[in-house]
Length: 60
Image (cartoon, rainbow, N blue to C red; front, side, top):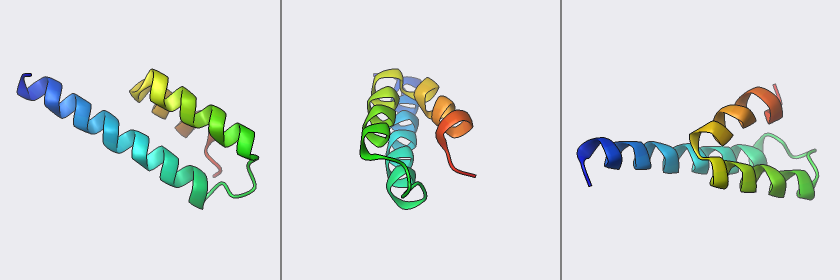
């Protein structure tokens, strides 16, 4: 694995962990099913899922 691939994988992992943390700390009113759907979206789509969550799912 090159340094670029490793960096991208690390960035993706950190972003996914941030979304999961954010779901359970700042979005307490969100239903469990919605949280599960967001977690699946983020894990499947990676950075694209993180961006979608930030703009569409995150409570402001």
